[in-house]
Length: 290
Ligand SMILES: [Zn+2]
Image (cartoon, rainbow, N blue to C red):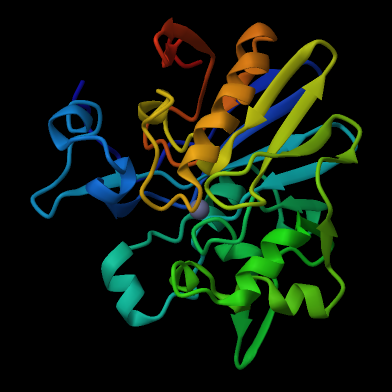
């Protein structure tokens, strides 16, 4: 299905038990369609996400704000405003997250928890902002969370994926004691926990949100959009594609049985939806987005 794109998902909220979830956007950016859909032939993927003349597809940058009543949690911080000119020309970022937060009536110092699922530049860009030659936390009161193994990998600067990491997004927070490093599945605060799903990177963590019987999961780059639900529709960016498939199976087993609301990090249209199995490794949205 071809759809018309706005340059970001509009800010809107839904409830999950006693919690309120709000989708915020840093604005769409562009990714190469071939890279986004890996080994899937273009005649198949272009039916789901139409490319432009340069074969690029619009890619959402969806953050989720969770208000639990006690905590104000921000999951993921988009691309941010620190890209150099070359990367700015490639990705054409809209840098909308702060305006999006304002629209949701949240001041940066009200955020007390920031969770990064991993440290690729398009997931932690607004972690920090530049003031002259200093880089500071955008959210001064927040504790930030990421997996220790993800930080270790980022610091390796491996030839395969070093372009995806920008140290200014996290090193100043580590040095300042504001970045808390996790070792595997962990509870952050009551109702908010993280679960490691290897594949995209070795230590990418999804964020589990639970209030009463209701559950949601920010699945991040394990399933970046609702066009990537099928087990083998794996991005070329993934370091461990076979593990992506295994992690997806593990995810669907619980997510479908327990009716998790799935929150999509890069979907330019659908920020959240329920998912159901279609048979033969295929999956689909269970009902229209709320
Ligand atoms: Zn990533």
